[in-house]
Length: 514
Image (cartoon, rainbow, N blue to C red; front, top):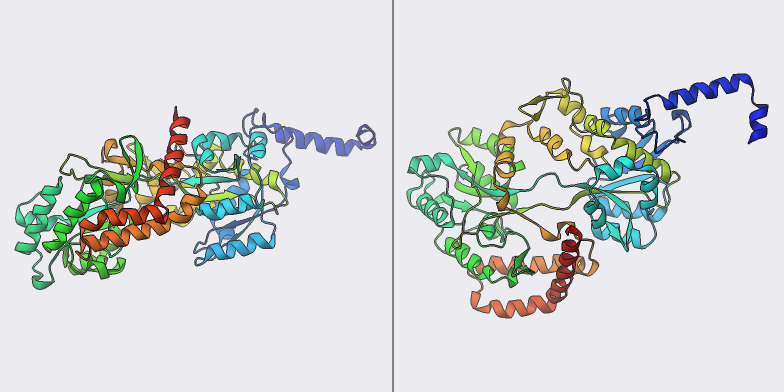
């Protein structure tokens, strides 16, 4: 090395000096690479950085031409070639790519823990911990330790998450103009809900005659959001005397089924609900035939537009957390991940991939990626981020597809700018997620549990089994007298093992939180 320096020309030394000065500008805080200079004194000049290949989830616009791609290239100094998975059967395509050894440096997929765990255990992924320790100060600051812990496979971290950004998905949406006609208020208890639905049936405020339906749901909606919380079983697994218990083994399950079954028997729940598809139930509400429906807040704009055409006088609102007979109330609150980003073993540039992710998570770069520039893409109103249209949609609507991890502390607030694009949707979102008291947001205890292979293998089968049985109970095709026999079948079909695994996982999570 000394000999090389002796042979170097004065011109070359001058060029090196210029490059060094450029790299050191920024007073030791942040360079054009998006890196902290104190943590990466040997950062390559942009010209020497390799081009990276990234595989992403499907989107309806070309990745490489979207403004966020250019922003990240400017802020990180890396040129990235983006490819995307198909919209349908993406997991099959990803399996083919991973098995072929195609040299992608970064891969982002939807959250499929079974797929991710399989790749990790087969040695197809790079262990990220050493790379993050050396090149990832922004990653460590942005992503919470508990999120990383939940993604460890055999003690090693192979992926970074994009966590869910809001708590509550759905509730009962009710026609408030029907309530006004009858002199009723939005129900706050299960008893009041029964009375409201009874009045909807008997007095037909929508003028639908024989077509009148008080409450509609879809056929696979055996566990009705909000109502399950009123009976203390908001989540698939709930605490009973300090232990996690699946709904069907919970003593409250019988009370829930009795209540909903009674609604069905009285004709207060759609008699055709078993055959209802999601679109069928929504069409009934949107056409003005039914007075209430259980929907996700993101469905509100389409429903509102349809009602404006068919029933322009219609008004609606979400029902708050209903109190049940024992005073319980609650919504299932999300916990877990939306997407995972990993580095395949076939990557030619794993260190640079982590450097790029780290640079994208530099706080101001991440904020710019998420919601843009203040005054151009958004404005701050009463402390909230309001989108400026149409440029926000044109240049930031797809920003989440470029993320390989998020600023978990701040992103939930940034993200709400997207919901504010539609005032009707934001009102619905805001009511469920910002206006409901914290005590009715019942966290999914297993949402951040490490991947449990045996539990995952039987969980879907058990969920389908319980769902089908519950529908039959509600519709009167099965008697609650047979519950003990069904519970025995549930336990022998994998429920017993699932309970043991869930208890172990919840104990581990409690220990981590201490």
